Image 1 (cartoon, each protein chain N blue to C red):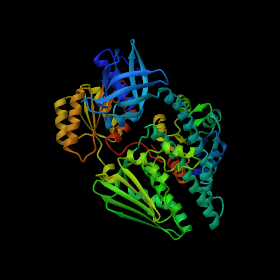
Image 2 (cartoon, chains in turn yellow, red):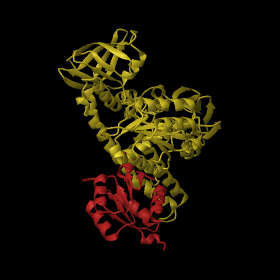
Image 3 (cartoon, rainbow over the protein chains, first blue to last red):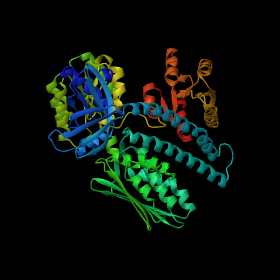
Image 4 (cartoon, rainbow over the protein chains, first blue to last red):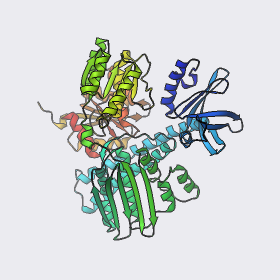
Amino acid sequence: MPLNQASVSSPTDVLSALQQLLSAARQGVILFNERGEIAYASPLAIQILEINEDNNGGRISAQITLQDGTAVPSLGHAHLQAPTLLMVKRSGETFEHIVKICAADQDGVLIQDVTEELRRDGGERAYLDIVAHDLRAGLVPLKTYAQMLHTGVLGPVTEKQGDALRSIDHCVERQVEKIGSVLDTIKAEENRLELTREPVNLADVIQKAVGMCERDCKRRNLQLTTTVTGSTVVDADVQRLQRVFSTLISRAVRAGMQDGHIGVELKHLGEFIRVRIWDNGAAMSCEDVGILQSSALKQAQDRVRENTKPNIDLAPIHDIIQRHGGRISARADESGTTCLVYLPACRKTATEAKSAPRRALIVSGDTREQSALKNSLAAEGFQVFSTASAADAQRCAREHFHPLLFISDTLENADIWKLQAAIREERPDEPHAACMLLREVEQPQRPTSDGSTWLLNAEKLDSGLQSVLPDMCQRAQVAPAAPSPGTAI
Amino acid sequence: MSITPAAQTVLVVDDEADIREAVELALSMEGFTVVGAPDRDAALKIIEQQKPYLILLDFRMPGLTAQEFMQIIQARNIETPIILMTAGKDPSDQARELKVAGYLQKPFELTDLLNLVRQYTA
């Protein structure tokens, strides 16, 4: 059902519309009835008491308080900072508005309708994707020829030529990182930055980043030392963290004085891994410190307007770290610059998490369906237990089988979620389970806000299973069957 | 009977001549027989006539999407493994959606290209 035709005439319809809207908006949703009163507010926990539409500039002003009557909440405020989908129903017709807070004080907030702006941005985004595609593709011949020449298959290479070829390869890497940084900065600004996480040893990431800077260090006789204390496994988007640390370390190298010193220290501190990158070179500018410590697109744009060159690599770092549940700070003075990055430590080692058993529990009264599912999941490497009895399934799941995936057309949604929650509570150290519920839906849906449940149509099981299984495995933190670059799938 | 690399034809489909030629050279230096095609018609002709062991396919070419190419291949019951070469975002999603044998994200490492091709021609 298209978003702008979501019907809210009955409680069931409201729920169904909300499921779609929540999954589309990934933020709060507020539905209004025909009198302009709130029909439903999603987990934002806010109420809009009064709405005054101002035709001048398409602005909507609204008074917002918490449901318990307290002042403008920082929580609701924070949620609405990102574009929020607002469905307004007038004279039987539903209008879709995308709004965000543009000003707030003790009396209330001013909400700006950004629907048109975002539609326009949608076109710009598609254009940007094509530009990024062409920029990356254009680097293929450069990289391939440089690497081929370097291997010597096209003839002997002198030491100087080898250096030059390494330099070309290095520049290509940097260029790819810059393209990624620009795209991530824009995604972060639009709250669209999505991470692909897996358990990763941060020490390996740092080592690679250090390796990329070794030539520059040698050239300038800089001493670069790395120390690692304790386990440094984090649940992270490897490519993005790689980019973050390459940027921070290479900045330190660029700032380094002849014969200077750069230190990179990783330390496990309770719940966090701390990465400290320091140098005794030229201090990082206040503007760059600011960019590292806040969401940065606006600051970067301001610097362009002021005719000063923003460091595009630094721009998305704050958001990437924040998305990982971490934080970053920087301090710079005449003695040099120190950056501190904190990332939540992963309880499991990378190897342990990757080898988590893949168990699936099928609860279905349809034996044909059971057998088809069993085959599909076995082909994906799952151990499968199937039963038609809900009681059996519950006992088995809690006592010995502990499935990563529940699949059911028998259990009620509420029952399976309760079971899922109980298992999570009993076994907090094990990967979280995900559910697949077979219901009469046209397309696969994700009805819960934590994204751990999928609704699939039993009639379209084969295609549906393939489309959701990788996401489900990722949600359950199972080693994904998804391919990594350069590998077969 | 084992097949020598020289007997194994790899088809590279990419409208960008610079990219196509770089990949062709890299593979031919490793002993593979490589043929290039800049568009759909040339690619299909080579597939019919030379029956390549492996196809390296650009994801986005003017006038032809990888999806359309895959549909044509499937309609003709051609089972040659296909490796997607893409500079787009979310390459693993694209690869999974198209059910191809593997993918390479542009710009790729030379060793990744060679390893993946060896895997399918070994």
